[in-house]
Length: 135
Image 1: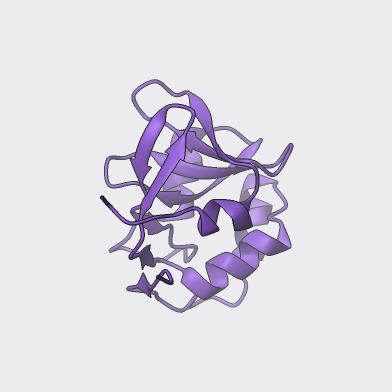
Image 2: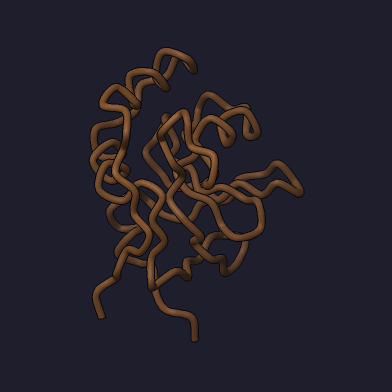
């Protein structure tokens, strides 16, 4: 079964990535920009993934638009996680974030309860391919 992405919203600001990079002094990898541009704010139909810490749910891709008021934005996530070595790009339904490591490209699951990160994938593409349905 192919993953269907629901509730996508087109990026409203053509300079969204540049604004985030400037504000947080980071460089967003092109593969993440491409993914977000295609799935901004969307939720996958196959939403389960595993990390070293256990099984988790992929809630939605963060909105990368600064004026968004109905969905969680990267701005809120960056301010919450406060770790310039990662870029949060998605959330689970419980206040945790899925992040891309700027150091090695791994996908990390950040827990808001412990402020700890566990590895959830070796890189973005394989992580996304590994999403599976709820059993």
